[in-house]
Length: 295
Image (spheres, one colour):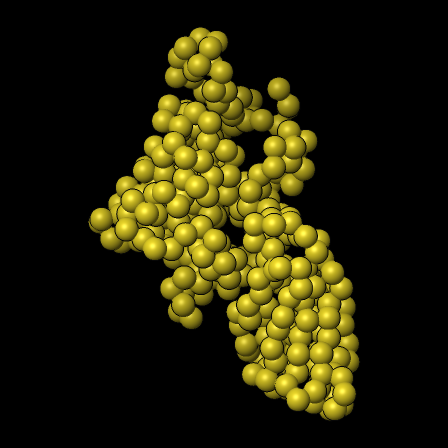
């Protein structure tokens, strides 16, 4: 296979080739803590396949990164994928098949899946501190329904009313803010992020003009289950409101230091998102705008 694989579990080895519980590690590439983390990652794939052999990458790879976190006692030193994803929130949480086969945005997909499973565990499952939900991730591994359908089935089994779409919205906020003090749903307890999430674009509202009270950002094409973040500056951020064309969801998630941050997502439908900022009464207008994504 590709030269950069350090470990692999092939479900065919279990189902048709040698009929054994086997995974493989490249001893030339994996050593020390990396060896054990790789073993934890591939062992999860083996276990997952035994319970739900056709689970998609989004859940299966997320559970394997979660296994690495458990092994490493939640140290993220060897998991750069988390920050890779946070710097590329425009990558979909859901893995399209061609994305995996062509290896585009691989690290970001891994990071998104790992953060998704960790978030589910902290908010609803094993790491929530509620003994009634101490086997949430195990139940997710054993669930035969796949993807969000499987997540929703396990949520229902554990007595929760929240479903994947509701959780996804809070998860996009948690990935940006990571501040459970503001809201328990808006961050992580097990890990801390070293860097801030880059924003898609910024705009400044500051000079009074009665007939120019809104600004629409250039369209941004987003796949389903992805996000973009915008920063708006104003002397009066409390008087700003937001709308988003393209059937997208948007929400102001933070107001501080004369700035507001807005998250935008198309949720389950890919498309162009256009965020529009409105200043109440048309008292403010745009002075400066620029894109900063990817810098």
